[in-house]
Length: 117
Image 1 (tube, one colour):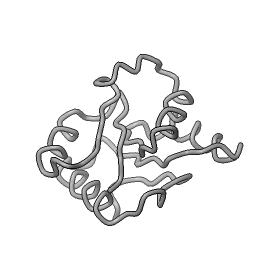
Image 2 (cartoon, one colour):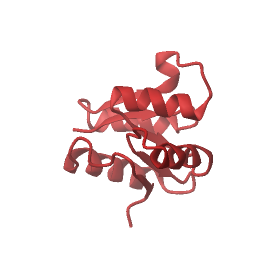
Image 3 (tube, rainbow, N blue to C red):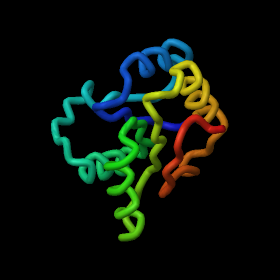
C-alpha cells in the first residue's frame, strides 16, 4: 500500500476521514512530525527519503519544485495535487482507490491532479 505525506496546507478533515475509513493507511501530516522547514525542495527531499507520496492543495509552487527535481535526475516520490474546490468525499474515495490499487514506486516522478476523472 502507498505511503503518504500530507503537507502543511492539506485539509486536516480529509486526513482524519482517510484514517477513519482505512485505519491501516500509512499517512502522516507534516505538522504531526514537527517538520518545521517550509521549503518545498526540502519537503520533497524528505518525502523521497521516506518513500512517501505528497498530498497537497498547492497545485502551483510544489509542483514546480517537483518538476525541477525530476529534470535534475533527483528522486521525486510523486505528488497528488488536489484542488480545494473539489468535494472532500470524492477526494477521499480517489486517494483510497489509489492507495489500494497502486504499486510501490508507481507514482515516482509523477504529478497527478485529483479528482481522477
